[in-house]
Image 1 (cartoon, rainbow, N blue to C red):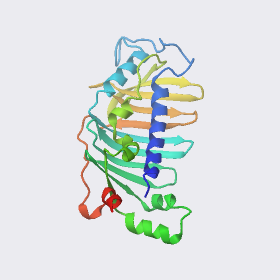
Image 2 (cartoon, one colour; image 1 turned 60 degrees about the horizontal axis):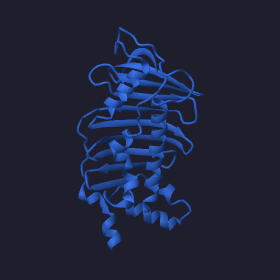
Image 3 (cartoon, helix red, strand yellow; image 1 turned 90 degrees about the horizontal axis):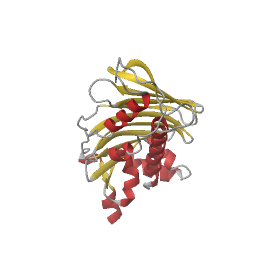
Image 4 (cartoon, rainbow, N blue to C red; image 1 turned 90 degrees about the vertical axis):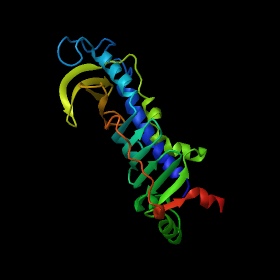
Length: 257
């Protein structure tokens, strides 16, 4: 299988994530002022305004050594779902799904990366081919992990979803129009809701109020690409383990033949 399929899926996921991240946490438009969200002397983050809290959360999140991302986003390419644990050392493990194309599983243990595709994904990617070709692809790849060198330039784009530093670089501090909102909980963790508007889109940004002020969730309603991104398991080890040898198909060895 060509690497263009997983690469396109990864880039679509990253593009959607970056759009929500950038719009939800930077200057989005005229719907407010940089001083929006009056500072409060009581409750979480006493004395800080909405923009100050948002910037504080971004800075804290960018220092995380690892986290798990759970995303469900609507894009021009269809519905995108991603569930990925990743760290700053390049380890990751999780799944990505886009529209009706099925699911890709991804593991990166360091210099080696492994990808596995379900039958729906494999059939979609071979659409237009003969029945014999499709069956040959399924026979070779169904249920098996494709191994590749993570440092190979050809694999780099497909593995961007594993790069925590790359993803967090899209979160920016600066002028924004976040308004302080109500207190709530996210996955059992206490949080403060910040709200922000950009045209037809409304954002809710959930910031942890205990421990580090990490971002816990970003929601977008309305607009062109609504969806939700949740962040959990900060600074926990990423369980990225090499699959069993019998289930691995080495792409580099096949290419050398």
